[in-house]
Length: 511
Image 1 (cartoon, helix red, strand yellow):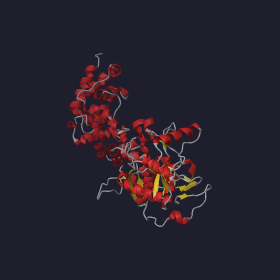
Image 2 (image 1 turned 30 degrees about the vertical axis):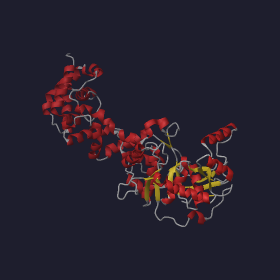
Image 3 (image 1 turned 45 degrees about the vertical axis):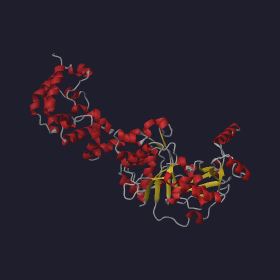
Image 4 (image 1 turned 90 degrees about the horizontal axis):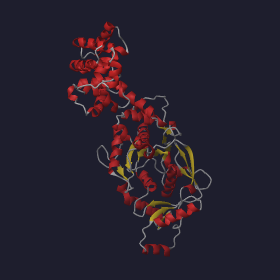
């Protein structure tokens, strides 16, 4: 991939190679994820983190986790913990942090406030930035006038050439200035994006001279992120395409600081089927990673799905582990087109992992969803067998709660509609009566053997299919659908089977 370039005229031109290759390029790939802790971990942020992680591992590089927490009003430690927990749940591990040893805490921008100001003052001293004394009211008035005139709202540069007398007057009024970076116009900012290809942004579309440090001394995102990426020697920045105009602004800052910019790759955003960007406003908690953990999704499934949402392995594999993804990941195969979030496709992945991950692991993950039941009624092996017979039909692990309820209930309630439509049949009474007689012959613990006893009842009575199996299922679970019948009988055990069949028989009318 080629490094980013800033072009200095109104027409795209080539920059000299010595500028964009710089004096020192780290030998090792260094990438980062840098979310703002102003909300819970978003699906899009998680996918971006995943792509950075995969890229780092693919190139034997370093993956860094940094919190862009300079928004003091909206940043919250609850969100910080949610982001950390979400990445940890997805097994996306970062390699550095301010702590010695591990696991590492993320880096934080708020630990570097003075450093940002020092860099900003260097830009002022070189005539590349200036103090802006405009009050919020003056800026709002300026924007309203621009709207009335039908133009774009942008800073008009009124403080760029402020006189010494005017500056002294503002200082006497104790106005506290912000710091603005000079955005020259006209010019084109152009770079070769690792995903999008050639990108050209006109500087007149960037909103005029931009604030880099607010009047409260806190660095603005576009400035702080450049300083951070330089300090941390980031070689690549992989992020969402909603940052493309930010990248243009940041490239101007790299140029002003005389530093080499990292290589950029902008991933297409995630949309729903109606072509709306995934957002909490439109989609609620469905955009947050923690919802999928709470609902019983497998982290392996979510990682697999997010990885292939915009990227397709050259090998054409659809199911792969995180480790396998690290071996295959290639930015050149990341799609330029928007990704569509398809919950049914995610369910397909999740069902696969529920059925194919080790039973011991699935059982352990299922236990929180079985916490409302008295698990002491069964041995650990029997609990595993309950999970084994139910997981074939599960889409998400939370479904195991209602699906397993009949195993733990002391008595079964058979819905009235089943009593009227099913238990009212003479064949149902005959099946249940004969099954009760054979209960003492059941080889409990042998799933196939228990099913064979039910089949023998059908042969003796000349019934089969729904007429044979549905009355038994209804008696044992209160429903006509469920897991393998032999497994149900075997796991319920003699006492429960006998008691439930007797209770169902009592509901069958004498004909």
